[in-house]
Length: 293
Image (cartoon, rainbow, N blue to C red; front, side):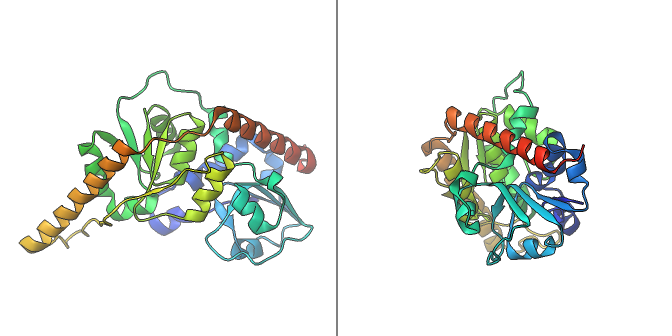
């Protein structure tokens, strides 16, 4: 398959991840089908996938095209040769890491989701809490309970794309540890507050926020770190139960404080409009250059 994205999360964990899984559906709506099925062209899509390992794995393709991907999750020491076409990347950090001009630092391609999905006719009264998918796997029961106590809906990136998109789009605001929760909220014009509990990759957040004119945006750290008890391994003593319950109470209090004191973010409308237009122009260039249809 010529579309390159992280497609092994389901295989490794048994659940999906919206930020990765949206690639085939989104790209098939914008990129010519003969490019996506090509044996000669590899299209790098949405996600933090630009590193030495992925570059080496796909270097056998005659042409490699990068469309809005980000650098990270591994070293990047390989210098790209003339068989690589850096059409655009997620943000200025990725552009600098690849040694290409900042004019290639457009945005994460997931902002094009708002071109495909309209705004909901009915808005929800409850805000939405989105953990990183790994936090959901390790702490989902506790986080879902905390969200409910704070009168929020709990939304995991492992749910199906339609549910994820409609829930975010109808929310009054979103609190998210998952970066693609923030990206989706932003393009749907839903204010969002970024938080970090178990998962926070500073480079990729900074990369995207800088691209969207959110230079002063920051991810708010939540503490303490908590984990769900494994099945059959519940705390056995009163002290252990009280300690675990106390940590959950502190985490709930800290999340409530972040929501109460931090102004939700939203990229300037003129910037996101320009970014979407720039991405669509890149799409046209890719299709014009590489499609044989």
